[in-house]
Length: 146
Image (cartoon, one colour):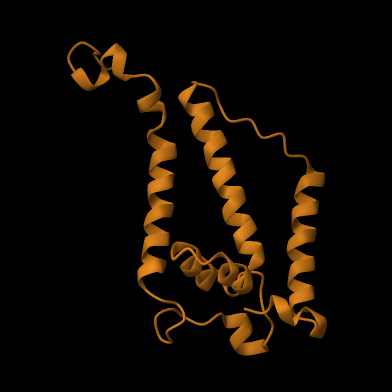
């Protein structure tokens, strides 16, 4: 058991919201570092990142194709280019941001984040990803190509 009086960082005033926010802050810092790296190392330049194996060997765009270019465009504030590179990734990044804020608020209040996801929600999410993948590989879905 830790002695609170021996360690000033564990004093009763410091064990509140700041301590509960350590994990959400660490996750945010990791995501920010990944975005900073993609923002600094341009995926539009050949040779910086490996090619998508599905696209390379089959010519089929996976749901993640264009995700790095999308992230690079977002880091540089170019939302239209990000949407052109991968609209589903933009929606995923926005969903992550909302989820992170909800998590951080719940953690600051000392409550667990409760997601009431049912199997129907997961089926819908899978259906959206599948529909996006199919449409972007059909001739009329060329506007979704990265």
